[in-house]
Image 1 (cartoon, rainbow, N blue to C red):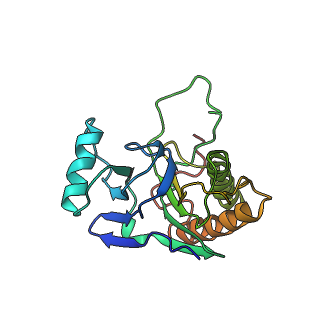
Image 2 (spheres, rainbow, N blue to C red; image 1 turned 90 degrees about the horizontal axis):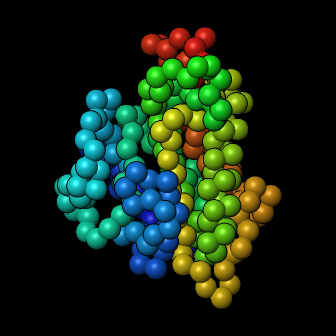
Image 3 (tube, rainbow, N blue to C red; image 1 turned 30 degrees about the horizontal axis):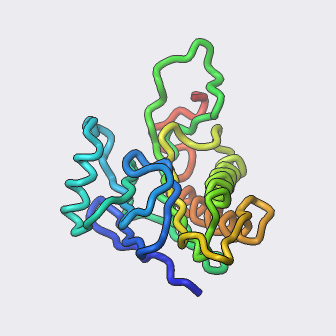
Length: 219
C-alpha cells in the first residue's frame, strides 16, 4: 500500500508534505486546479482576514512552516487544531468543520442580500491509488456529496458554506491508473466513507446551530 501524506499540526495551521510524483485537484484559494504540489496547508486566518495578495500571504505561511516549493493553501476561520481524521481502506480524509453560516447552492433569497459570512468546511483527502484526471474530478464530486449528506442528515439548512474548499491527492497516473472514483465505484465508496466520518465528527464537535446563530435564517 502506498503511504499517504502525513498531517503536521502547527499553531493555527495544518500542513502536509506531498510526496514527489503525487498530484492534486483542488479548489484552494492558492494553488488550485490540477497541480503537483509540494505541500498543502489549511490555515486559521480568523474572522477578520482582509489580505488580497493571497499568493504572497501563502508564501509567508509556507516559509514560517519550513515548506519549500509550490503548494495549495486553504483558508478558514475554524480552529484547525480540532481537525478530524478518518480512514477507509487506505483513503484518509481530514476535515475542519465550521458551519456557522450554512448555504444552499441556489440562494433562496429574492432579492439576494449581502453574501453570507463564511463558516468554512475544508477537506483534504489522500487516495493511495493513481487516479486518472477524470477520476480526480469524480473524487471531488464524491467528496462534496458525502459532505452534503452529513449536513442534510444532521438537519443543517444547507449543503455547505459559501467558502468551502477541497483538495484531493493521489499518485500520478500509471499503467494501472484508476478511472472511476464516483460514489458507486470501489475507490469512491472509500472516499465517501472517510469524508462522511471526518465531517460528521467535526460537526459533532461544533453542532448546528451554534450559540450565536439564528437557525431560522436561511442563507
